Amino acid sequence: MGSGTEAACGGVSRRRFVGLLGGAAAASALAACGDEGDSPDAQGTREAQEAREAQQGAPKQPSSSASSSASPESSPESSPSASRSLSGPRPLYLGTYTSAEGGGKGIGVASYDSASGRVTGRGTITGVPDPSYLAVHPDGRTLYAANERERGAVTAVRLSDQKVLGSRATGGAHTCQVSVHPSGRWLLSADFGSGSVAVHPIDASGALGERTDKVVHHRPAPRSGQQGPHAHQFITSPDGGHVLAVDFGTDTVYSYRLNGTAGTLTEVAQAHTRSGAGPRHLTFHPGGRYAYLANEADDTVAVCAYTPSSGRLTIGKPQSTGSKADTNYPAQFAVTPDGRYAYLANRGDNTLARYAVEADGARLRLLGTVPVEGDFPRQIALSPDGGLLFAANQRSGTVSVFRVDGADGGLRLAGEPFASPVAVCALPL
Image (cartoon, rainbow, N blue to C red; front, top):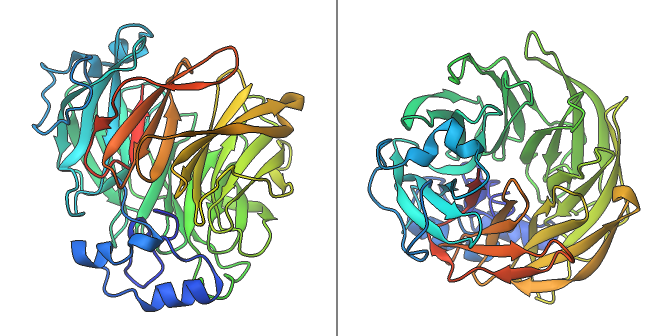
């Protein structure tokens, strides 16, 4: 969920609610929820249960944040051809909560130096409300944002001139994650508040069409205290044959077949975690036969086996996140392009766990943790070449950048964290 569990109270968005962690704790957290709204005070009272979530350009002043609207003239790196270059300044886009106290004004635009990791602010793409999660089209020309509000929506932005191409309703509440199907024809989205997933067509310009399907997760029934399903992620398997939805509220990962012509979904399998695990985010190994699941509610991770022919996921035994904090909410994994190392963002412990990936992806071995140098790392991402790791720290309003050692997967902080209001997503291109 947003922080984990941010949505459950009627209109309460997942981004501000992190405590749907089951049992009496969940019940008391839910009882504390008021009206959804976008009240900073209401959000602040849920600090123990989450917080909320939070640019493109060239290196310098890594700790300064972008504030003015970016123009295409001042951000040449936003062009598709520039974003394909693997050297020099590279584009970086930042998600935030525009309705949060101290939040951003839209999608942050920055750039990073691929060698040093230094980040430079370039401005803001305005007109996109609460862009808490970002994804880019395979051709690099269009950016998509989840609009995490009570009326869930998704927005498309053309990167060549940073023009907002429009938004489409998901039909659910509090859209928290988006991904683009490898074909480039479909946008997949997850609605935490309503426990639903949706599909939108993408036209030749990158703009979104009307929703072609929506599925609400009714089976199995959510565990006690959850008060409903809470979809947190919707992604495509590496082989492209199935799309998988991770639902925190039902402790389930759903596998669907996506009709490539009609954009409709057919459920083909379910994989269940142990009760109360609260699965949040699934990340595949490059080999395509294994994936790693971050379980937010019980502070564990699991290796999952994936069968491409059936779309079935088999969830392994829970493993340690490496956290030493009394309360910790693992957010998500990132796996190096060569598949040798995996990293986990630990919110609460405020660390990044490092794992060695063994047996062609079938095993994770915890190597240790390093401080993230920020507060509440909501999301992490590797640069396309795997040389840098970015951590969006929601509560400190910063993005930490680490150099990744190619020999042992070690992480070394690359200068001072970059200031970005309510940073909840960092997307390096």
